Length: 224
Image (cartoon, rainbow, N blue to C red; front, side, top):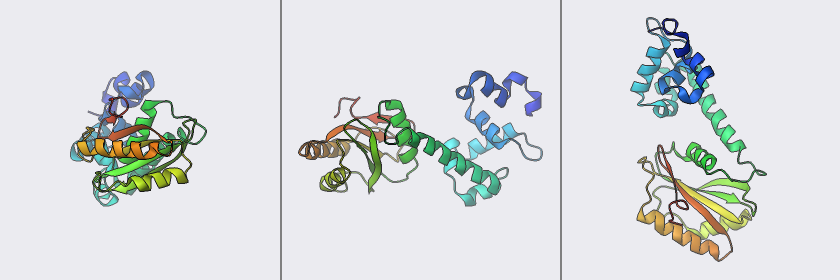
């Protein structure tokens, strides 16, 4: 069905204006981005097929240039637009954590960490260094690979915390499996880091595990 055949209030752009972006499906949002379909195929049909082919919005956004360039209805121009949209989103999230803004919104922290860590195919351990007013000093990715006692080194973490003169930290790492559930290794390394940092009077405010859809907070789960 073409957009012109839809009732006006059911067209994606009008629906977004009247009901907000949260009211739109992935297909409708993608259709707005694409703007036009291909010969013999409406933009909604094209958006639906792309969502199916790439198994969702995330798969589409993470696809590389070679694959997208071979996809009918995408090509170089829309590939550039997609990557620019991702970068705009990340910079928007980063803006809220620039030094001078205290970290006070758990939801914003979750979205920020998802934008940083969710796309990795391997585990990445990161640290948010905070001053004594909970302003972000720096976000840093420290360790890569399997997150366990052998790969995350408390001595190196303490060294980096002192180098940034941090008063508190938030740890985070992703689970490529997509499940934001803490393992025994996650709990052990969190306890070791908390003990090591207590010796230099640095508070561990949280350890967040980033999955596909959820972010688990150790602090909110009573695990810290």
